[in-house]
Image (tube, rainbow, N blue to C red; front, top):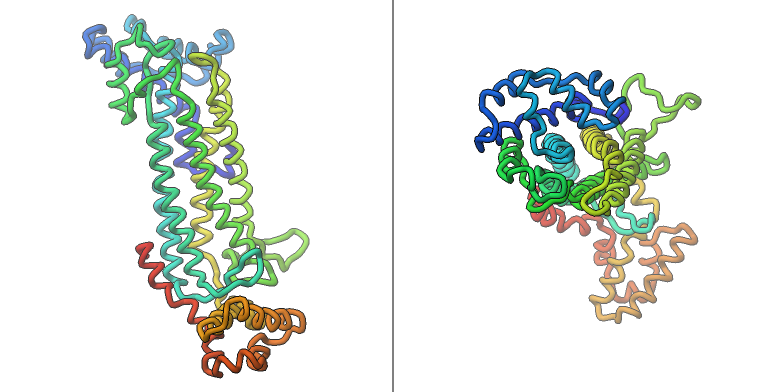
Length: 430
């Protein structure tokens, strides 16, 4: 992944050095397990634990000859040992090491992503409470509908991300599995105790059944979950972008002193962070497709998934880590313009209260169809002539026969639309 989008803690997990270190830990733990069974001298295992090491450059050098990275790795490790080297990789197949180590790395990545999600949810929740009663325009099909609050918009995001956290925890558990079951999953040359021992030490779970590999439906579900989380954040980012349009300007990303929006137009203040998040979410969704393509491996395994996973597993976790932190900061520092929100509400001349007038007439005894046929012509006239809807309502004979001046005024009070805000927030625990 590009350094531009890589945060240090997550990036460190996926370095080549750390990947081989995870491989080495699996190898050493397997030796310890054999020693527990009495099949390897404990003094040899102690030497392996104390002295085993590898050299990345040497691995590359050996791989030029072997054309096999795990063989190159084990030979590099063996060069650091004496006669006890013969126990390294004893009874193992390459994927016993690689898949189990990858699950261990994913577990580390998951710990970071879980914290990211929890922090992101907390930021949105605080912003939602801050703007709980900040009235704004609700839009459907991009057209003014009825009043809502900016806090409710954020509360919606808050609840969606709580669902995403639940999905993530489930999917994370699904990839934190190890397998040390041999060439085709039968444990022919490896005792199942070795698998159980290694997984326990790494904090992973032994797969109930495997072939030479862990089954890739696990990884497909995991990548699909990361993609869904990224897509939720993208949805929020698109909302910020839409609300930052010059003709709307209800919110704005923080614009720092000295920041530039355009090389050509000095006035520009663009939602670049939200646009950045939108683009990176597309990349993660693309990785989800690749993960699905990795599911149908041949027979007990082939290697077609390997090259793809060297890209999609690090990149997806790195990008989601970046997205959650970047957009979390955008929300935390978001500038909100309540006066512009109210101004925009007034732009449609009170038409946003048409349903209140409709329901008030129904409450007075008019049939729904009859009431609709009274209100809609006044609404269309307001649209077409750009006349305040309330004026037309107050001039309509049928409406004024049924509604008093006070009842008409009540129809045009936006506070009516906020009466259940507290209830909704209470349901969310906000």
